[in-house]
Amino acid sequence: MLNSQELNFEQIKGQAEEWTREAGQYIKKMMESSFSISTKAHQHDLVTDVDKNVEKFFLDKVAETYPTHRLMGEEGSFELINDLEGIVWILDPIDGTVNFVHQESNFAISIGIYLEGEPIIGIVFDVMGDELFSSIKGQGAMVNGQRLPKLARNSLNEAILSFNAGWMLKDRRLEKLVESSRGVRSYGVAALEMAYVACGRLDAYISFNLAPWDIAGGFALLQEVGGTATNYNGDPLNFLEKDTLIAANPGVYDEVIEVIHGEK
Image 1 (cartoon, rainbow, N blue to C red):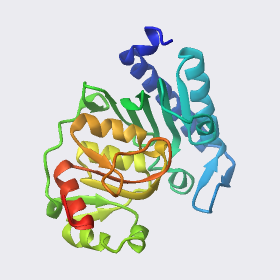
Image 2: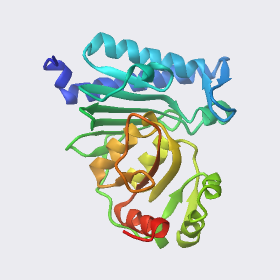
Image 3: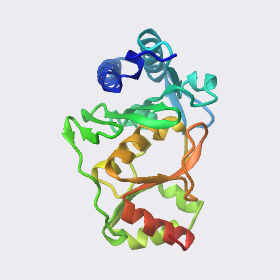
């Protein structure tokens, strides 16, 4: 049974932001020393002991402060989560680990706090850029305390898109998006790319292989500014398994779907 503290989402958001900044300071400190790096399923999927320690930090904090909440994290705690009943924190301790290891920039801590499967709180923290994107359901989204406006409907020919160039090998129709848009970028960090769509720096982000922790925080942000996010087929997102993604300004989303699938 959830008590009043565990349903006080203003308080929960403030606490989550505080922990996120604390974790960010830990990551910066660890960057000044050495840390271990290993691979998961393939050579492009890296994990460090910093990722694991940040996840444990949140696991301990959530368990101590909100004992009825559960946490689904990339570095192992997801194995205990088979549903989204109650309140679930969906965490990527370091989204963009390859960037973290090789560039020491362009990585983020991402948190989506969901109630019965619906996004209530979103946090995406660009650790090195010191930009904290956050949202709470029904109250809009912010970056470093400044409210983000609702997204206006842009057109594809004015749009900046983001996707990994390798995805064109999976679907050559993406070439048409390149031809039709103003430009294409790739940052290698899904949470930030979704946050950039939410604040208008990007107009669409496309990926073919994302886990719930990659997108949960960004999806919550997009919901608060009128953005659209579905899988590649236009179906609702699934926050229990990997899926494809189109996250976009609503006008650009319609045109992307039309180019890919020939219909709105």
